[in-house]
Length: 391
Image (cartoon, rainbow, N blue to C red; front, side):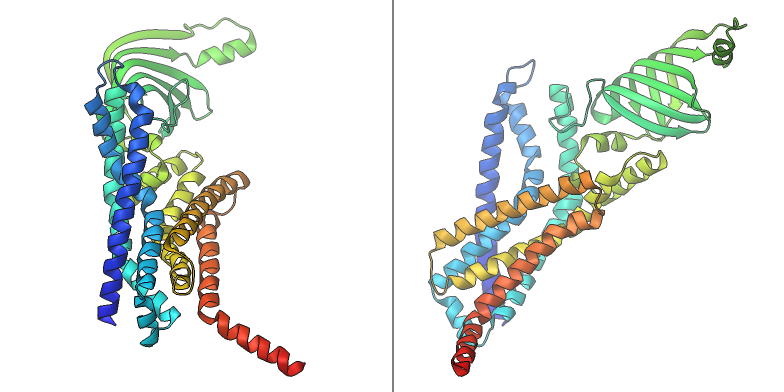
């Protein structure tokens, strides 16, 4: 059994590696062609584009790994079937369900690699990619989540609430065109602080070229009574620098830029805590936690889908047809996963259902296919015998 499992693992790892290299290379080529128009704008050169694509490789591998494992497993099992090696394993007493368990055991190292990729490599590479994109192009990329007015943040202060608007983010926690709106406990605007630039550090925001507009507390009551205020309604002061305490950190700033699934669990939980503490919507991030938890299970689902296709290869059909069917199933699963995310967010489904639903459905269908391939002929014979006895 150990020899058979080791041989099966070698074939699946080899085929999956070849498929992943081909898919990553193909998608990287498409991305290069799509972004070639950026070359020549300002100081952006071709080697900058190659550097950005290099940083995007871990994220691309993270996205493609389930489909690559599916196609690689189908190729490996179909190759074993063509060489009649699966027949030898079946004749030696290994049933279809036992073969499936072997496939699950073989997938465990891939699951461990996926966890390392999802928790360490992808978040670090995605953060470096966002910083490099900001530094080289002046924008955070296609999915930066920025409005025309810039980035918006909210936090609670000892005196009330504060809303922060950042015109542009820079690498290392830097920011341009920063505006702070401070409100008191009654949600009345008390002051606005505008700065040309600033830097977010640990627990503080350092501002430069600051303009402070302090609103008198008597202004609103005077306007309501229709009387003249005894103090100036707004006092404008200029400051070269100012340090403001804040709960925002460079990590939280880039969490606004990053896709939630690309963040590590620690950063994701920190961001959810920040959103919850400031009474902001965190459903998308909670769904991302469930999707990251279910990601290793997705790899087992992909192998389970590949099993019946590989087993059927021992009887009929060619490798090309099985691989094509595997590609269709992989793309269909990806589309179902995205559809579940979007529909679940619109209809406010439970986060666990949005993440687990597509995987559970795919697993049930794959296990049904395995049982049909394994026991279909036996069930058919017994059904025909039963009908014959009744006749």
